[in-house]
Length: 180
Image (cartoon, rainbow, N blue to C red; front, side, top):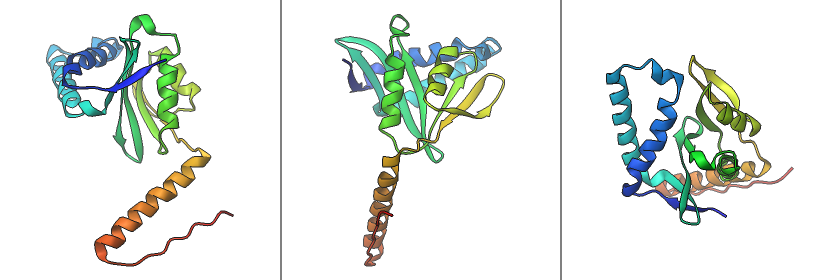
């Protein structure tokens, strides 16, 4: 089906094009001054270069069909980018990516979506994202990501933190978790 690869330095320009396509296609960009546009381009390029190993590129055979980026944010993760190539849109690729992100994370998920991007808004809302915050151009959407298996993952993460702290401070601990 799809092959996912970690982005590399050679992919910076491609990912920058994806990100800028989303930003400059918005009505917010229409009101930007040239200097603000240049700042946006420079900020995006710098952010991509700093986080290139967190970007993922999706291939179908040898053809790039999409890219995405998930990063730490607040009490969870933020989906900073899901970009599907224009000729591959409406084929379920965005749904495939978003479903995998949800299934492979145990924390709340966030995403800033342009209000006029009806396709993205429909996709995220179909995956139980709700509006957390809103402004004239964008909405911060949140999925609390409460799955039954997440409880066990959170307990295991807590156990790992307690174990690391006990080693650090030379304290013995015993942690028991019993199902009700």
